[in-house]
Image 1 (cartoon, rainbow, N blue to C red):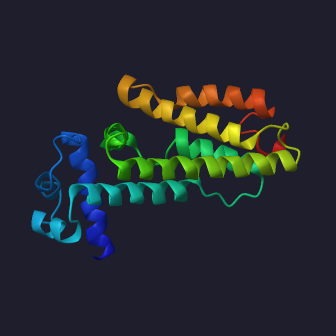
Image 2 (tube, rainbow, N blue to C red; image 1 turned 30 degrees about the vertical axis):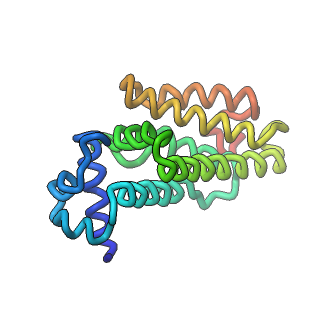
Length: 196
């Protein structure tokens, strides 16, 4: 399948998932959100779960791209991660956070979805732990367990997502709490950068 068709199907999946929820999601509703027929979608994806797995794989790839940072300074890299997680560049008016919450709610029942969310969690934890480890070694951060800081940030990120979807709370509220925790654990305040 060409990349353009795949992207269109995945974008239509997002829209249909946001509008109808997981329980109301059908291949026909995905087709209705795009110029691709339901037969063409079935041609490329045998099942709805296979399509949603591709949707989650795409999410992980985009998130990994958002987490990447060319900076060598671990303080700036950590700031970039916080920006990607708590201040995403893409507007959230399309309901994308709702779509992800719908799929997270299915993870206990679908091993494939659980695996994708474990991949997502592992990616974020690995990136944060590497940054913290580099910052400790460079003397920018206090001595700490990088894995625990990564777990803290990942857990707070998941909480921010749930609060944004369920309570309409802006992720910046959770970012403030994360920054306070980082100051306590690392003796570093985000956005200080290399001028510290």
